[in-house]
Image 1 (cartoon, rainbow, N blue to C red):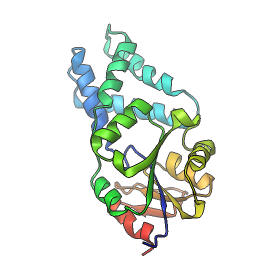
Image 2: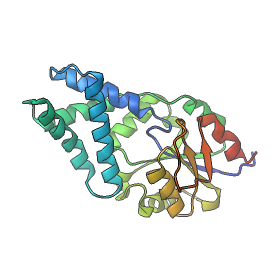
Image 3: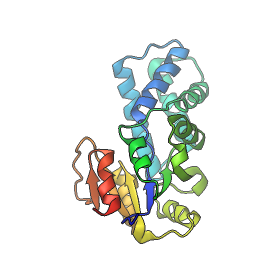
Length: 229
């Protein structure tokens, strides 16, 4: 099949894997394990704080290890918990790795493009991402999973993308497409290394001054882009 893009570089969370569902399940299970019944407000507080930490990680202001612990230091202090935040953090990561939720159309799209080479590019935690990908049933579609922990840099750092490129046999930049939900990590990172980018924007958020090469609201919309139709 003659395709416009042969090398498809996918983001994981909130692109193929439903991170919000995984996060909520993991958080609720962790809280209940230590005697706290999480309500909607507590879930929102945790989600917002965790999201702010990952944004700082993209900006190289904190490390991944600091994220893992700091979010539960904050939570323990907020709730007055006596439990060691390290224990909470370890339990949460364990629970998060059991979040096998996928977004609508994920498996359908990957299966519809058997002649493409699929690669996953993620800033997440290696042990968590690999287990979630396998449990979701999507692992078999990918030739390789590139995690920032192993690359020594994270999206949007050009070094992360360059590391991935160097590991892909016969890689052609002009026939590669980055698909992800984050303007700051996926789209800006791709643009920084001359890689075509497709923004997965199911909520129709404004792009501001950034103009991705393509924008889709549902995953199947990427098919004609890849095929050059």
